Length: 334
Image (cartoon, rainbow, N blue to C red; front, side, top):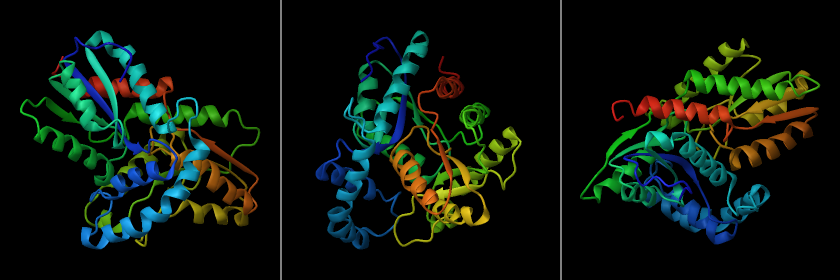
C-alpha cells in the first residue's frame, strides 16, 4: 500500500509486474514457482502431462538453485526482491506526481504478493470506479500481458459491483520509451573509457511454437529494436537483438545470447554492452542472469569488457514515460 492518501480518487491505476517470491528460502521459492509455472498461459501443456513433472521434479530441485540466485540479488534493506522494491518505488513516485489529478496509483504482482485481487479490492475501497490495468511489459505476449488481464477479469467475475476496466496493450515503440532507452544507453556509454564493440538488446525468450500459434511477441521485440537503432543511428550488426532465459525442451526464439557472446572473442569482439529492453525494472533475469552469469561467460571466453546497462527502473525518464502513458490511456475519464 502506498503511503500517500488517495481516498478522494475515483480513477485507479494498477501497475503490474511478473512476480516475486516472498523470500529466498525453499518454500517461498516453491510457492512462487508453483503458481507461476501452473499458469497455462506460461506452460501450454496438458495439466495431466505437466503437473506431475512440475510437482514431482521441478518443484523438488529448482527452488534450491533459484533460491541461491535470489539470495545474491535480494534487497536486504527492504527484505524484498529488486523487482518488488523498484515497482513499489515507481508506484509511489507516480502517486506523488499524479495525486492532484485524483488518480490513485497501486502496484501488484501477477504471481506472489501483493496480488492483483488484493489491489483491485483496495482501489475499490478507495472509491475507484474506473481502473487502468497497466502490465509493465513493453512488448505484448500472451505469456505476460494476457495473463495479467486474465487474472484481473477472474477477480471481476466474483464481484457484484465491477469497476470500469481499461487494459494497456503494449508500448514497444512508444517515442518516450525509445527516448528513455536511448538516454540510458548514452549515459552509460559516456562513462566508459573504451566504447563497446557491440550493444546487445537482450529480450526474454519464448518458445517458437507460441509464436507459430499467433503470439506477436517476436514482432513486438523487433519493433523496439528497429526503433531504438533508428533513434541511435546504429546498425543491426552493432545492436543485435538476442534472447535469453531458455527453459525446458522446447525450441526457443534465437539467437540465444549465451551462444552469441561465446563466439564474440573469437571474432575479436572483446568489449560489449548489454541492455534488456523487455524489462521496466531490474530483476533476477537482469541482475543475476545477465550481469552475473553472462558476464562470467563472456569474460571466461576471452572477453575484456562487459557492461550491463540497467533497466529504466524508477529513473525520472521512466516515470515521465509512465505518466505519459497513463494520461493517454485515461482520456475520456477526466
